[in-house]
Image (tube, rainbow, N blue to C red; front, side, top):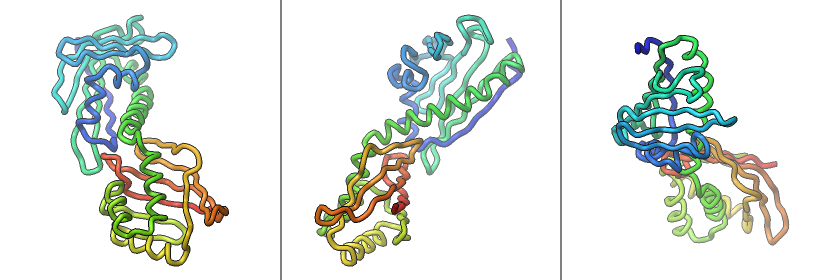
Length: 252
């Protein structure tokens, strides 16, 4: 069968290539992407199973797998429509880049209409994929955010420096109504100044942090001597290893 029609999509995922590839070799992770009951047998000839909502099932066979670079598999619907099993081929390639991992997907078809019918589907499915990978990388985002806020109330300069190095990148950027800093040294000096001009202020996260593809945000309250001094919302951007690379805060 000639596969003369294809679609391609490329996106950057804020995770290391090895982390991304685990979702092609582990059925539990594969099911997080595709849905409960989906499975993958990561070897040439190994079966794949994808369960969509509404009891729609796709099956296929792994054609090639090179850890952690690429996987190729056949793809078709058990019902035979819109394409039968074995009648199309999906290839996913992962390349390292500075921000994380560049994913390139190619889906090859024998029929042009079937190709066109899958364009929006892959746009949606790859967004889901980026989210499930990022959710694993940033599984402790709330703890990291709490540690960030705690740094601002820590009176010990050495402890502030140690804590920030554990949760933030060396080039971390921070902006809010009173801040415009770049790099750990600049930020640490700013925190020291904030403690001098606004002594005793503590910030605490209110509710769970919400995240999407490497960006998280939370609401917070600022207090002094148990009296509320303000509130707001802060957005955090994480790198491929789950460290904070930029922060933007908004006071209510």
